[in-house]
Length: 322
Image 1 (cartoon, rainbow, N blue to C red):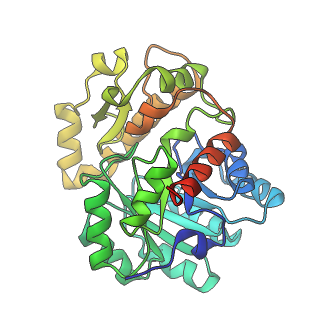
Image 2: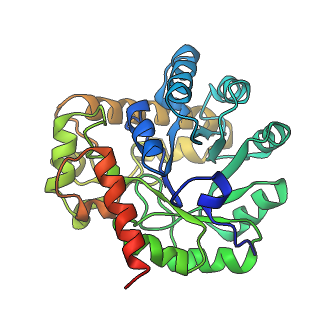
């Protein structure tokens, strides 16, 4: 059982990662997080080309020596995986968060360079597998997470991981206030990955309508959709989502379940889904698909990243004295 907390592991002030959010995370958000005592990560897929990915990493490194990470989709649905990994190794990012696949190659190549690897997990079997491969920590994605959510409650998932794993457990999902952070730490988490409360920040280059939706909608409006990526994804239940439905249709299901076609179907569905999310994120269209988690309930205004971070960390400190 590990007692190392995320702040000690990375040498930061508070045990918080701003979660890598597809089409939302950007260099401005990362830099603001690093400047205010926490860490942050962005998805490699937020950058179309290797040149753009390299430029983003160099931009962050030029403004801060604090640790930050990059999220890497490590399965066949990401044809850019090998090239992205090569770039992350070459530029020596501080840590890589792996999702949706086997992180064996990432771990083996990062170890000699001192790059840490944190692996997204939703169940114990997978957590134990990545631990056996040499992962530095697991990111335990619970049923309160935005995006690809897990099935277990934060407490149940953390408790199970702590009792059966020997590496740090970072909790992902449901953090809106400092007291939430203290609570998961009390349950044994090493820290938390926090996403939803940062979506409506000044620095995010998403449409004003998306930010406004973060304020106007609440927890009751978050639904699971399998239409976008083939895997269940939490989205805001806008009129368009209601009209489109949230279940994969028969063709999507057949393609997803056919071993031969699955690899290609996942790529097609993921690409189509990404395009839908991308169109919604960057322009007010009728086809509005916006990702968020249940913590949307506690987003009431559009604020600078620094203010959101400082409110969270101040509340976290205060929670120790109450």
